[in-house]
Length: 488
Image (tube, rainbow, N blue to C red; front, side):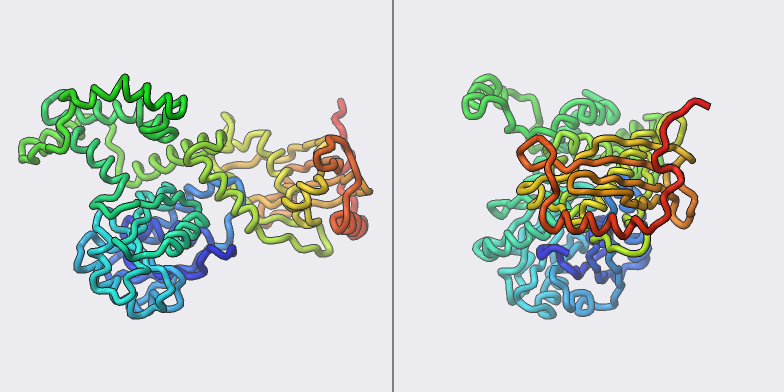
């Protein structure tokens, strides 16, 4: 694990938010001790973990680290003992949160961070019964916590140090989140205040018969809801000049009586009945689990799309993937081919025929090549100073079809190597099945850093690749090695 990744998190509360935290930490390889006396809490966390596993199989195209261990305990003291981070996610009742936070404060050394997931309570109120108040922070996430990357960090007035905020930010970044620091204590923090303002206006639009609940939802989902995943309200072109022009054009409109501002309609029985009736009239009313899965599928697609542009939340995802890449276990040599960690085929790898599309077979071979390069010692430093191997030629043989959910291993054998060339043979096989579903043969050439032309491998990389080729030369030569397309 990286230095910023906690080995153990004490989790106080396992509801919607606590269960999401448990899933995010566990799937990043962090052990979690859970305290939640509520009936059914453990089952709920397990359900959240199942949902998160399903989503994560489609999110990073890399093997996840071994899951952390979930331990359910009977007391706060057991939950926080030895923890490097305490995450409180109890219901939004001030006295309950104060009691839990004070107990965690008594049972942990002063240097341990204690964070609350509260969605609106000020940290100065939360820390009132704590002795070591300076280590309490609000770390407010959004549901589902295992997918949405934002976490708002807020310290009590004049309490938590800049180093505590920085340390918390590093921990949350390590598990794939995007922290922002709320500069001043305020009820609701930043995102919820923005969200609540929109919610109030949405209620008024339905209350005044301007639009139905379906039309309000569509107005957001098909317009700025998509745009806001990429740009915030202050992101305008042209820098300061562009901002000035924007405000000159649109600023006066803020005085127009377009919205109800902070006024909110009374939730009378008649109004609630109207909301319920219009919701039922939509014609499409999926169950809670169906809606959760559809929500996760769509969020995965949005995040993957943003990642392809390395923009917004996609940049956060790309950074997390790079972190995962560094945490993939180093392959160890042995008497057989190099074996990379098992990968489960996600559903979005399928083509119109219902099986894994052709380009994914090549991608799996690429993972096998990366496994070899890690083994021989090609890292970021070597790439910048000496270069790396580039693919010259690839031959794929499709033997059997792959389907969503298949667990695949890539076994790679070095057929030959010299100072510049690296000849690889990949076998793609289902876990536990020796028969290959596909093979891939590749010829790579070592290219010098910054030169744009081939050059010999250097130093320890050269020694390791030649030694690996010598060891693999003792293996049987694959039957399909050297095969070419021929007419029969």
